[in-house]
Length: 119
Length: 113
Image 1 (tube, chains in turn blue, yellow):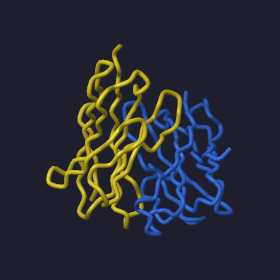
Image 2 (cartoon, each protein chain N blue to C red):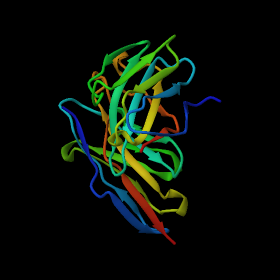
Image 3 (cartoon, chains in turn purple, orange):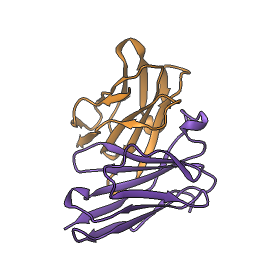
C-alpha cells in the first residue's frame, strides 16, 4: 500500500515485559514521527527522525522508551519493562521533507496506530 | 514556545447545522497551522493547512478554516454538518524551524440526526 503502516495493530502485554512497535513509513519520506495518544488526551510527541538520526528525543517519557530507524525507512519503538501508564495508542507519521529541512508546511501522513494495553 | 488550545472537548450539532470547532495557538513566530481528522477506528488525516498564503483555507469534505492573527485563532467551520462528519478533530501548530508539531487535545464532534 501507499500509506504508513504499523504493526501490530493491537498488543496486550503484562506489566514488566518489553514490547516493540513497528512503523513502515511512506516510501521516500525522510522524516518519521512517533506520537502517543492516551485516553482523553491529545497527541503527545515522542520522537522525530530525520533520516536515521533523531535530533529530538525530548518527548520520550522515560529511559524505558527508545526508538531507532534503519535504512531511512522502518522504525521501531521499544518500551522496556512496561507499566500500566504506558497503555495508549502509539501513532507513527511520516513526511516527505521534515521540519528541520525547512519543511514546516510538510504534511504528515499518519498510520493507523498500535493500541498497547499493559495489564 | 508553542501551544494549541482546543476549546470544547465535545461538540454536538444537528445534521445540517453549522459546525464550529475552536482552536487557539500561541507561537513566537508566524505559525503553520493544521487541522487533522480521525474517524472511528481510522488513522489521522489532514483536513487542511495554513502556510502563510490566503488566510481562509479550504479543505476536504467542505471544511474551511480562517487564520486570524489578531485573535491567534484558526477555527474550523463547515456550513452544514453531515452524519459522516462525526469524528475527532485535532488542531496542530508548527513553527517550521522547530522540530516538532504540537497538537491540541482534540474535539469530538457528534452529529445528531
